[in-house]
Image (cartoon, rainbow, N blue to C red; front, side, top):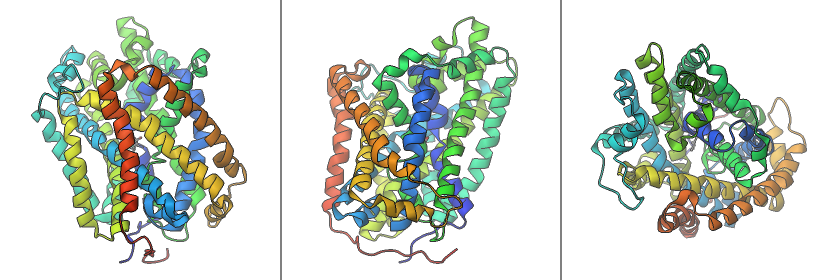
Length: 498
Ligand code: LEU
């Protein structure tokens, strides 16, 4: 069986950018930044991009490209036992999929709500009580929410359709349409936002550093977590995507384009969001910090409120924002599914359709928990643990193994082989020393903090089951899949040289 392949390099870059740009940029970044010191967050954020984001992206592109497989097979080709890490990262991707799809589904509902501002004036009650039917404990599920189930199935169906068409005919095509559309839609929001009175207060809030915050380890872990999440690194996606590249590819350039587009877009979208928030603060005479600190609900509670406050074209601006969120989410969602799908197809030598049915079937069933009344709380816990521990620790193990127990230099040479500009030995330095040191220290601190103080005051049983439990499940799934008999030795070759 020959391996699927991207049609063009542009197609690959668009898909990688599409994976990177997602809910993380529009929905997650503003609230993570807001709850970690606003502008103060930007310093660790940029630090993490340079020391970890870009170097790891280059690393993963080089690995996937060189070893031509999803994360498990790629790691196993580097060293047999490392296959476990590939499955651990795939399991992280699997769990992210289960809640990511729910947020994309909310975005779909909100496109319609936005048209008539169906959310009314009390957008908080609307979101929590009416839409989500939120219960008072993560353990009280309260049944499936039919109103969410519909958009939820819609999102699953589109993902299934795109993925069943394969790399070139499905993922590449979808990104070629959705990414340009997303840029235009976000541009509309940014222009609208910046031309509103008070916009500058919102931007000041985002860009003014509050230096006292940056001494807290949690802010740094959040920054690393956000960079990993946002760039789709350390959880199998970029390894899988680059495994479909033709042999002669400019790895370094592709990685830089992907990272710059992602972070550029992140700040671009945040400019739009924060200027609209600034306007709202301006009309209500309250500080932006009060408005921006809404956590997960920022996009679904605060933003609708800001839409209500607009002088004109409320329906249009609102629908534009949520359509952007939907498109951004779709292109990322398909990439997370592809991440573990590739692992399953490779190892068990299954045709795409069959592997897709198994992978999506399993994630669909688990994802139903996010369509219940306690969905938001479970999501908050899973997202927090998966990001701050699952992704970050997966990334940490990756850089330590590859940096210290593998011929890192050979990967640098591989990355440079067809690249317009070559990466120097600074790259080895980042992978070998800087990233593991920083990440290791921060993660350790963060584990201690979380043991001392349970996250967000959730019941311990819920944190154990849904937070630490999911994290432990990634380890176990890693071992289980690693021990299964598969077909690791079949090196699938690309069909043609481009
Ligand atoms: N990188 C994506 C985003 O920023 C998330 C990932 C899970 C695909 O939303």
